[in-house]
Amino acid sequence: MSIRRSIRYPIIVLCALFLASCTKKEGCTDELATNFDPEAEKDCCCEYASEVNFDLEMHLHQFVGSDSLVEGNTYLINGVATKMDIVQFYISNIRLVDDAGNETVAAGTYLLAKPETDDYEIGSFPAASFSKIRFDVGIDSVTNHADPSLYTADNPLSFQSPSMHWSWSMGYIFLMVTGEIDTDDNGTLDDPMQAHLGKDEYLAEVEIDYPFTAPAGSSSTIHLNVDWALFWSGIDIASDHWTHVDDNITLANALKDNIPGMFSKEE
Image 1 (tube, one colour):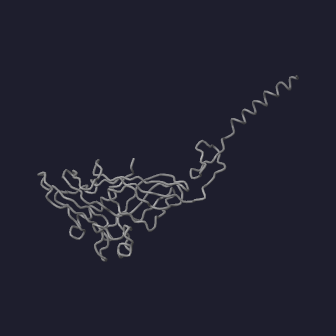
Image 2 (tube, helix red, strand yellow):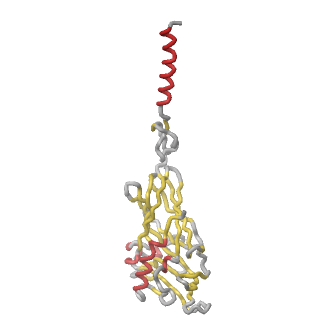
Image 3 (cartoon, rainbow, N blue to C red):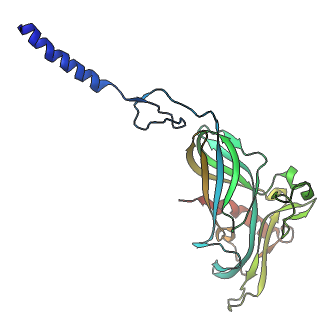
């Protein structure tokens, strides 16, 4: 073997090794694809489901402070024994906000949230990566003044027991909290408590940072906490615990302002 040939073979081997080390792993780098490869270095060959949407649910876990909310139980709120007999509220205008700030709305979806129910179907959304969820506690003005008799019995906007509707002019009760209060700290629940919020101007918007990616054809669940102790934040509940809006506008305004802070992402 000539010296030239003996030198050439090691050079060829070294070149092959060098080229191999420089070759990036090919694969799909799109998280929305069905064959997404988190180890891929060079984008290639992404495959997508024929379905372009994903299904969304909302899971609500309701608390009073650190205790799970159970209707009929008594809790300490701002140091005052408070029995929570009925707690329910409407959620509407649910929007997912993508990474570019664009909103996608679950049009026509209305939920009547109650502590005994955790899971609620929202509907289908186009697959994307999202950064926030927004929704309203209450009902939009047009729907608020519609006739509940127009809806089927299984629709949250139909007649409810207890009633969640005042009249055609005032519309629905957006949020209802009913119970009893120990006003003088003597161990006896001695005064009825009611916080019924409604009317168009008492619609409250909630926004929560909630980054997630939903591939086409998948199902996703938004997990949220609701803390009813925060509903009464800054309020002397022993002396101020009754409003149907017009009979105590000051309390109604304070409670409305507290609504967005009640909600948080479940960690």
